[in-house]
Image (tube, rainbow, N blue to C red):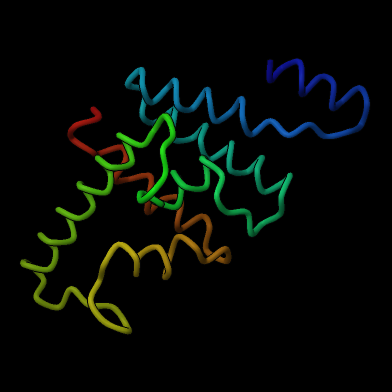
Length: 143
């Protein structure tokens, strides 16, 4: 399907939004246990969303996954995003215990502060990608 869409785009010099097929492919890869591949494909789905809706796109399933938006949404990856939230929460609690500082400018380091300081800052998208990618790849329950 994606090959056909890409071919059509080249032939007719027009763009087709391919975010949904990328999202479905990424979900399938993650559900099949290929976390790395699924993670990268979901980022491609978000890139497609941004090409279609602009850089400030929010609310799409790929945006929710990439930006760790865990609460109040049902989609095929809701279980995986809940597992990721639990993993990050555990990691932050451990960090606070061992590092006594556990603080960033403006207060205590929390998942909402990580989102605000890193994930939602479009000027550091590459940094945000690496930050989110490592915990997903290392989540014990998804290996």
